Length: 160
Image (tube, rainbow, N blue to C red; front, top):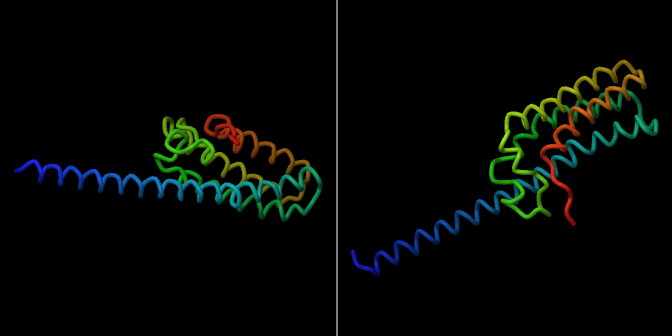
């Protein structure tokens, strides 16, 4: 095999590797964008509607039950939006707040997403009873054991 042939093979391997790396980066960016959108529309939106009921009396207990069910369903999908290689460090810290700790303790991350789903499901049940004080108490558990537990360990500070 001549040196020219070896150089051609090496160049081809580098080109293919570069293309694959670019594709992975593009896929990762797309995944992060989809993850952020899921967190906004699937998690923050129903959470915000529930919070409006708890803090301002807006909406009804039936609205809380509906939004809590939506929140529970969305929480179950959270781990799907976090494939390996989409953390801070893999991507710019302005693009993602996902800390590498997620993948260092994946089982705990999944458990915390499930805890959010479970607490939200409990809230849906409580809301069906219509007791505003019980709704408020269970909503606090959604924040503490669901959102807060995960964000404390796995979500970095927002960077402007």
